[in-house]
Image (cartoon, rainbow, N blue to C red; front, side, top):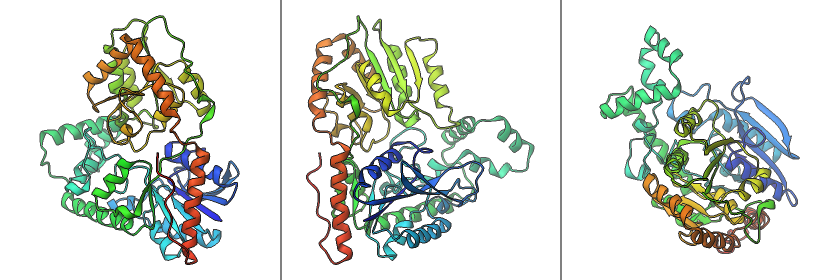
Length: 470
């Protein structure tokens, strides 16, 4: 079959979780199918809607530049007629037998309707909460978890950018001063302070914006209600979307597969340090990941010889890594190691006693947790989202309430003082690793779903569900 993968980005220029997963899945599928990729591209020096055709890892990739240079309305960030036209053109050129939507952010949600109008079988994987939240994580910008549009929340006050607030000053010396002297972080802090001081602060076109967000909710949820098949990587994500009105009959839980790599072990290989606890963090350095809480908790840890390694990347221009360095201060035990590649994982994991995932948002799956377990490394994680589906507290790791600095500190203290506990959790990590699905098995599951969906086009049976999810 000719398979078209649609995603928000693709390597080598985009390498976050969805992009890496789409690449690995496409690479696994191409042994039996003609697989191509349609994605959004952020590209300085190019104009929006330029088409950049090429290949990556022998996969044909059509990249559509979109840096939102012309976006001014709320709907411009989820509906784009130009990209819709390019997608229609692509369908005519490539004639796919099936379209798998991994993400539409940065593209246009209407691509789902385009595929439906063309009569092309398609499915959608829900990697996050973009269909419910324009900020993606269902996390308010001030840090608390949001229940989503089902609670009639005020999306405008949460998503409004500092520039939206200061725009009425445009053309004045004060506006020029703010734009030239203040970082995005500084402007955001001013806006947050004003919002806290006056919660009812009148904002430009506030009522129109609230109506626009209501329309966003209505439209995107209607797309999900009519989608032929929706895959979620965890039960938590399925249940959350069902609570927001998506028919459960259209959703199937299908945990992602992992490229196991050489770090999968059959017995722990963590040399015991003379003292202390070797703590690690893997992943993006973003505020919703809670890394700042880990730094604060670790600095409280009174265990001589302990170390903290923070491995990950930050977004260009994001000041969060500088904030982490300030939190670390002169503590030589805290090491910001920079970004890492998958090939680096065996060496990283072999020298750590525990991986910490201190997320503030509802994680939808967590590849990092599974990579740690595959190496026999226990995980301390926030008990939110899908993390309790992989971390069994007291068996292969410990769960703590999200954002609870004291609880996180206590967990690290327990592991640093109770070596028997750490040994039991290592053994439990290895036992649970046997339940983690590899990418080859996952590719076979996806292939069966593709073939069942494609059969519908010719009047075949409806897609059968794959084996029970792990």
